[in-house]
Length: 401
Image (cartoon, rainbow, N blue to C red; front, side, top):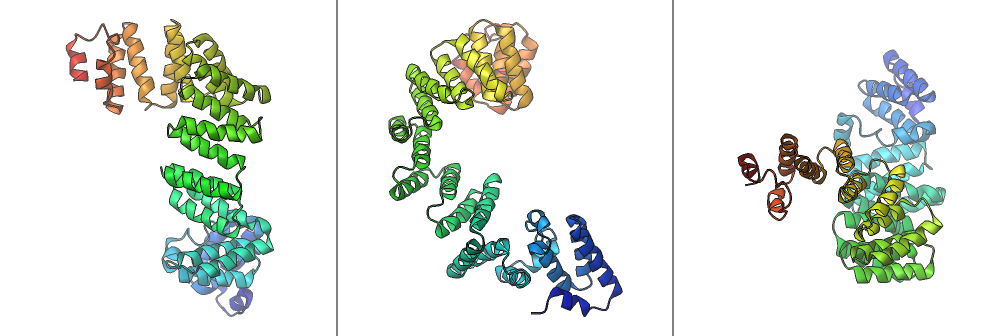
């Protein structure tokens, strides 16, 4: 196949040549968006040649621009997407790119993904393996693509990419962990647990998988089973801060707060600024009604994560219980300022405003809370001490009926 330079020489159009020259010059100094615009203009004169030149740039001619270019070189122009709508056409484009830059691992990975979509899995695996042979770190490109899908909430697509990584390297821990997290995000808990078991057959003492499986079981309320996995992790590594905190959190959920604090204290001995240990020790202390001590740990946590809404609410509640209503109100108001749709904080402010006999504001906040979550109408019926000074008023009766 002739090079793009040879093809370009065959074009006699001065306009075309000047556009190409400008595009190449811009790309050479790192102005890739402007360069891309030039090549799109050139495509209107001769689509095939401009496309080949741009492919060369996108696939490594100017490698400094790879990160920004490879992700959108074939997708930013809707017309180009239409023309390369099927996988075969995209593979043809990628083959042209590989003719120009045969060892570009990104292009090989991309081609492998296209082949996988066509069910040509052996050819796809050959592309992946070739990329990894050229650069052992190329497998991370597939993981990165999966991470991008994960970040956009496209969990099914992310799982497909993580599976591709695991097909190349069955021991790739990062892909395995992220696949499990994607399954959990899809609420496919049984699949996630089954895959954890599958991984543990490969390595029964993999603390990462043991910890993740324990976490899933804990989230499902299967606390006794969860604790067994945290204990297995701690048998392997007694100083695993994640396992210490996870066991403490699970014990707290079981109302075993004294025991929970012991584990969070062990975590804090290892890492005094560990935010998970700080927040969960605070919650455990609150569970023991030691609100003053709980506030101490909430404050330490908020030094590191000042806008954590749940902790602001927890601290606000602790202050209320200690009779410090105006101070508690400030933390609920801060939570609402960060998240104007947090119905729990809004409802709490309505209750406080009623206690302070600020009825108008109480009604305003109560209406907002009910609009966001109508279940508060029923909840109020089970809170006989709330809104005592408003319950007989027609406005209140109408609002909660």
